[in-house]
Image 1 (cartoon, rainbow, N blue to C red):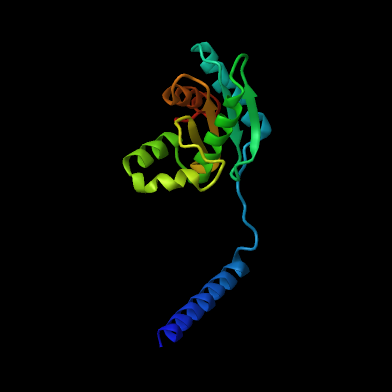
Image 2 (cartoon, rainbow, N blue to C red):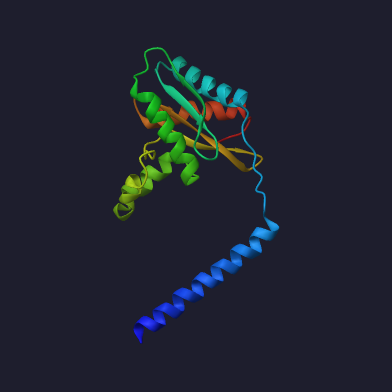
Amino acid sequence: MKMTSTLIVATSLILTSGSVLAANSKTDQVVSYSQLSSATAFELANVAVGQCAKDGYNVSTTVVDLSGRVLAQLRYDNAGPHTLDSSRKKAFTAVSMKQPTANLMKTVSEKPILAPLKDMDDNLLFLAGGIPLKVNNQLVGAIGVGGAPGGHLDVICAESAIKTVLKTAS
């Protein structure tokens, strides 16, 4: 009896989800989104690296699109080789989770039950320095900075780039 009930519920869910998908597919056959130009992505990376260099930090910066693919990546003189990967992962995490990595780092440290989030994808990095990028209040990608002696300093460089290039506050 219990197995029959489970089978009926499962079948109902499958049929319902199929009709919802079928209804949506008729109206939403194409999804449109905005993407940063490669020139804008490079400018963001360049301004962030320049700000950190001015502050005395050798960093790398990565800008990713909505799917987490790299649009621009820049490593400053004497930045450690690991900074390329950390900046990419911070940007990936910010766009994937749709929030600054500093917020995610804080949330996970305050709620240990969420700690497994850090391990669900090898590209995630829950350290400060990744910030989602929005244009006209629409998510278009993310920027990640890595290599300053503290994530809060990476954030300052990323925010400087966002404010300068996108003419908005992060």
